[in-house]
Length: 342
Image (cartoon, rainbow, N blue to C red):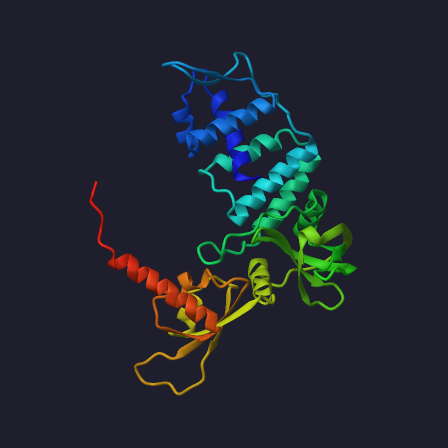
């Protein structure tokens, strides 16, 4: 569910929650948008057939036609399920931020219109996803891409298999287009960078694999059971796998701190760390090698500027130029005389 769509629904909820006329300014403030955007949301409701009335004059504003109530079910079972999955995915990916309890209330309303069998499968999916910590990249990685849309029925099957600890037979299309059928032991579901991922072990080899769920064509739960290794963290496994994906740029730098402290300076899975060989000088900290991969370098200088320890950029040269450019902009901003106070 995109942010504009969520706010259109929030507007309808506000209009239904009170019989009084609400001003454009009040509604815009409650939805945290400008008045022009609010009027666009109103126009969208009118296009959907909702009888929204705009009253002019001193006591004018926005209201619904008397007696109008949204029907109990405006969505099919499949549509309601798709909205629920979109909401859960968007929240886990950091795409949608809501006030405490708002998303839970929306989920509760949608659950009431779904058949009991679908609700049970949805609960299994949410429990499986809750068991694995999502990969956090907020504030460090560039904005996440749009959330991918895996098949709802496939996602429900995966959630069921994870929760019941039963093997899966699935078809999968790799990044190079090759299709194959796999038998795996699903350990957990994780949302990271706008995608659902399945952390699983190859049933024959026991090797860990990471699957993009939107590339799973079909999935079937088998009767064979399995045990998840003690202490296994699906979120950490997916983060580590994503960190190994080849990117356009590989950044290498050294930070002057301990290995343990360096681990706390970056989100899990973003970098690999290695102690730089050398003699330990009494009273001084050694250097730690930090390696990270990125599709673009523009966001890296801001991350480096926030490091509280000395660092040296070893490569690439383009990153050095970007850091110098950021330093010049910051210096110019600091040297600019303050404007008149208001």
